[in-house]
Length: 133
Image 1 (cartoon, rainbow, N blue to C red):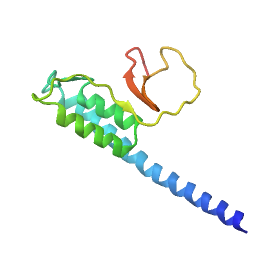
Image 2: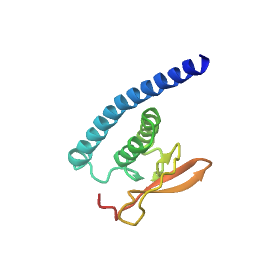
Image 3: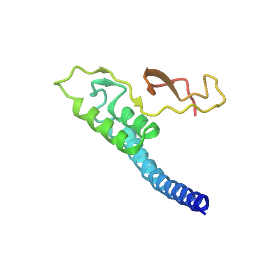
């Protein structure tokens, strides 16, 4: 009886998690679309004004693609606050919070981002410029 209840609890928990992740999926897609519009139309006004590489909007886009939403919001917000005359700027790659390794077809044209180990279970995310996808 206890095993049956535990199995039902796990099933409900998985269904709730899938429902939450689907809701976050739509929020993530909306935020990525807003960032795309910003990069496409509004960065032409102040082109070259970001003090960092990758630019703040590219940094935010990579964060929203690869990290959980709250982590992406926090990292993007702190990056935008640092993008001013009081900080030196320079190269500041996004950090992947939770690394999961999945087998996939690997060749130079199928890899969108390179993951470079930083700390235990954390990686820098570096864009592959030869990716055409």
